[in-house]
Amino acid sequence: MSERLQKVLAAAGVASRRQAEEWIRAGRVTVNGRPAELGQRVDEGDTLAVDGRRLRLEKAAPAHLALIYHRPAGEALREAEPVDGEVPKTTYDRLPPARGRRWLPLSPLAPADGGLEVFTTDGDLRAAASRLAHEIVSGYSVRVRGDVTEELLAGLAAAAQSADVPFTIESVAVGGGEGRNRWLDFETSGARGRDLRALLQSHGLEVSRLMRTRFGPIALDPTVVRARYRELPEPERDRLYDAMGLARPARRRRPGRDDEPRRGARGEGQRPQRATGGRRAGEPREPGPRAAAGKAPPRGGPRRRG
Image 1 (cartoon, rainbow, N blue to C red):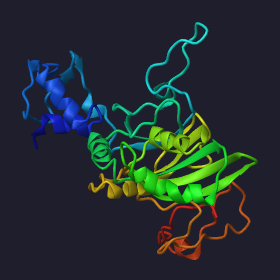
Image 2: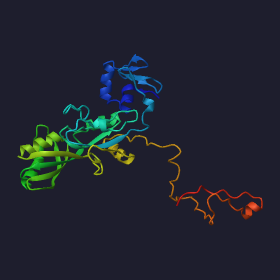
Image 3: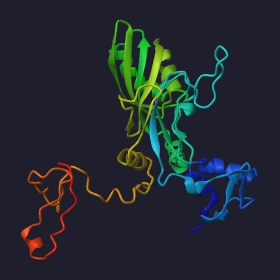
Image 4: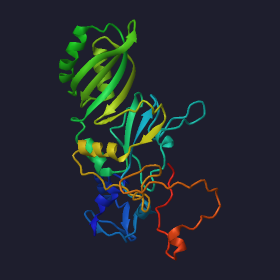
């Protein structure tokens, strides 16, 4: 069944739909060697290319992927400036191969900030996250230096609504710290890291560190240390699609394996193991009475480890 070209490119994680449309208008996309047209429909057998480079969509992952990454503060997303003659690794240098697709960030952090980054191979999911940017609830942990009082915390929500770019503070609480150094835990919607920095600095607090801990239904796994990632299993990935108002992708199946019962698990309908009667490995079985009478022994289920 044919589909619109920009939808195919977005579904493959090559680009968002808007970016794909821009590429098509600029003549960067070809279909079967000819310049593509906006709204053109393509089939599975068509050959697609961007800037002359063929897109091997047939090798793409069978379902859309998503992962979380713990981004260190100061790490560049794509391109890094040389430091002492050496170019440090970027976030994209640390991500795993996307299996024929491309990782797209959902609401990427500024380089000065760190914490949770969410990546997907689905251009539609990325577009939905951009469209709902002011509605998605995110969590931040911010380390500040200064006098943190109850009156100050109580006034932050109203101040956020009066900012140059208004945002909502759902909750704020002191998360720990000593002396004049405190961690503040925020639940916000529509806020970026720089918005929180500006708000706190306007209240006389010095921000020394800012981390995103949650994006929508996805939280930063404490087992994922800095500069490491974890691919989201389907239940977590599905919650992300639900939050963005999108249909869940088709589930992935491994032919010939998912239908087999797990080793060591006795499920409904499985026969219990038979005792060996002390027979050693390699020793032939003694014929039973039915076999002696010329009848074939009954077939038993495969041996399974207990």
